[in-house]
Length: 155
Image 1 (cartoon, helix red, strand yellow):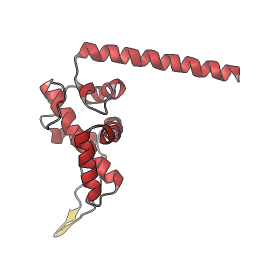
Image 2: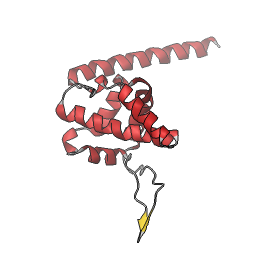
Image 3: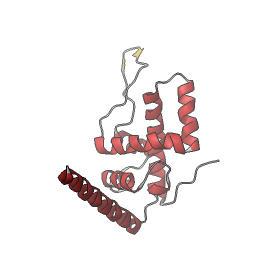
């Protein structure tokens, strides 16, 4: 039992050390991702490492597609599907990081919380509403990285 406790303490110390190193490197990169509610240093590092150079994505739509958060298109002839799902064709690591950030943001960012509540009022399932928040958050991430300015919520 004592050995397990020592292993847990050692692992926690390593985790704290890694998080401190991530924060130090983020500060040296002069990124503003951590100004977005829902994105902390660890998620910011994950997002930045997956995106790389933001100039690869001329629009937010391209970044949404890269993350695999774009809706699938289901149509054939005159039939158009109405229950379109998330494509999940892009980076699973980026999608997961944005999804985690969206889950936090829908509780702590008033704009995204209102957007989430609006989707729920439209009868959307909570996962569909969270997906919509994740898409919107991806556009915010793109704008913050492209403009190299801190996040400023629109009033």
